[in-house]
Amino acid sequence: MDHDSQFRDFNFSSSVLSPTPTQQELAQWICDARASDSFALHHLADAMRLTLRPSAFEAYLRTYPRKAITHLEYFYTKLRQYLRMLLDSDPATPYMERPRKFLRVPDYSDAWLELDLLLLELQPENHEHLDWHGLVRTVSESHQDRPGALRAWWSQQLAMSASKTRRMRPATTRRIQLVRQALKDRKSPREICEILDVHGIAVSRQMMKAGIESWTMAFDDKQFRRNVYTMISKSVEKMSSPS
Image 1 (cartoon, rainbow, N blue to C red):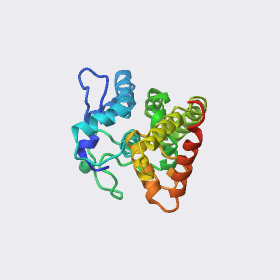
Image 2: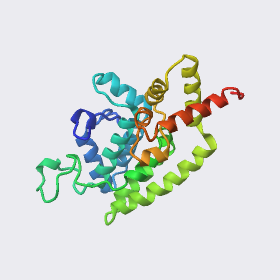
Image 3: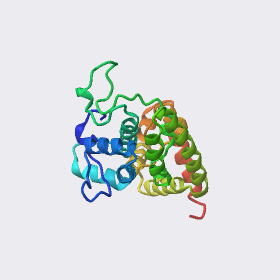
Image 4: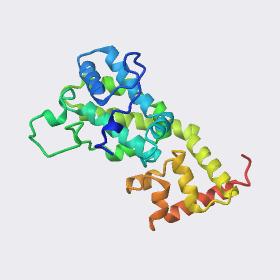
């Protein structure tokens, strides 16, 4: 997926001139943002926010119906794309046109993203709570240590997002609703997992850290299948509780 040019060029923005910016246009905005261009900063942050929305994923499936990808895969791959571009040393120059001094990495960035565990802490449904403008501004203004600036911002945002999630718990409520309906429709455990994946319901942090990125992956994994049955059982227990 990282090497799919159609995927990398699939982006949305609030810019009237570039409502669907390509990767190269995003790279130019990054360069301009580093030069204190407030308009470029705004458009870039909006592109991240808009393209990571569930509706953008649905638009991607309509545009490329033959591509097999879940909402979680779309979300995390897009997020990695944007973060690597923000950390890139020379985003305006296509990677293949640069002197190859180091090991080969995905062809939109020379930056290694060492934040995968932190990245997986972010649930797709929480992305609207994040300050994307603050992210672009913080990383763009930090010329000496962009990875450090990103790590500090990321940790702060995750803490704030976790606090809001504990108060709101919309994902848990939605997951229970989907499981209840699936059980009423006599769906099998694996079919329930497929339904949760289609609706972008994230697995637990424990499973994500173990490399399990979807409910169907969890069900197909002998070690984590019991987690699926536990999740379904808890939903069954709550079926008798007031909705």
